Length: 80
Image (cartoon, rainbow, N blue to C red):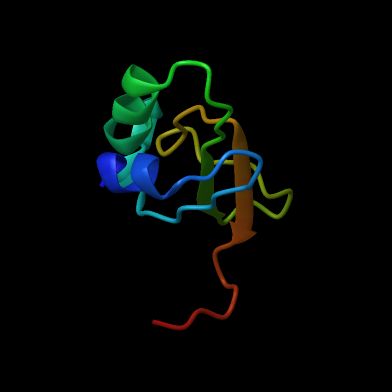
């Protein structure tokens, strides 16, 4: 997947790739492979967490640091 992303990117254009947590958790997976081939590439990892906390704090057991963390209420309407 990282190889396909690198082939598809164009200079001066933004490329957005969505993937599940497993593929970029702890800056590994796809992120790691892309950084190996192009260490100067500007990338960000965004994680989404559900929280039962009314102040929308990330549950400590689930927290894995990333560039951006989106925290949503656990009771938010979801579609599958």
